[in-house]
Length: 310
Image 1 (cartoon, helix red, strand yellow):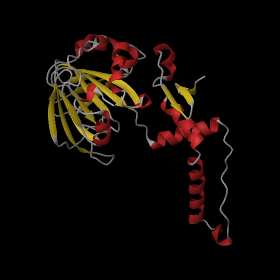
Image 2 (image 1 turned 90 degrees about the vertical axis):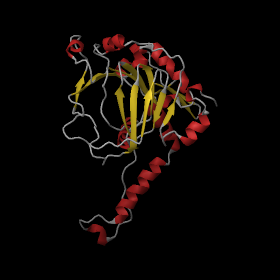
Image 3 (image 1 turned 180 degrees about the vertical axis):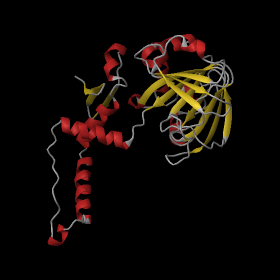
Image 4 (image 1 turned 180 degrees about the horizontal axis):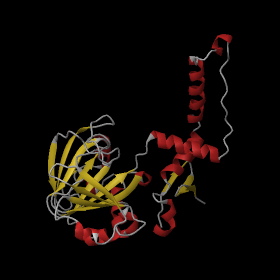
């Protein structure tokens, strides 16, 4: 399979060598790209009550970074400084169809893996600080230039700045650095430290992919089992009198493991739940208004927006 947005790489090469493994810079991923949305239009979206938006304001040359959540009043943009701030608007692909059309370039990945296209605007020096994410993202430069610095692999134990609502890394050491021009794109796998700083007024598109925690997935599966009226109950292992004390015998743990394993081995149940889970709308209450359609198929069954389709 070919994918022009990957430059000289085939889709097979990208998936085998880079996907969820290491960063990739692609120059001229979309030659002559022109942003379907302007900075002013992006700011207009951030005023809408149903649109998820944030402003990150940098208080000094090295932080701390201050987070403000939308929706915003129009006068906030007159109050912002000339530099060192960033506006971020989620799910612009749902609000602006021409932005959503960009997703056709990513047809080498399952569409139900997509989360959204976030668009950010920043004047010179604007950034959200050095951080890492748990999801895959393609960072497409739409207007202006942004300098990206990339570091090492992080996890939940990586030290972060105290007192910040953002996951700003306390210590950031870059291993690579590039300035992206319009049409350039940077792929980042999960947990890679990165820091994007606007060289001038710039728009950046972030095509992000869903990465729910296992805890979230198990919680949703439990909800689905209860909704289906699942009647599996806990049963003891064969008991002995010596197991009657307060200490939990390891056989009880083995019993629970076996029962959970039996549940996980039910491929029909898991397939149905997983398809529903991964096609659930990003904003369920707005799915009809936004005409969102998340689709998937498995074992001959077709799913749309979290439900089995007719």
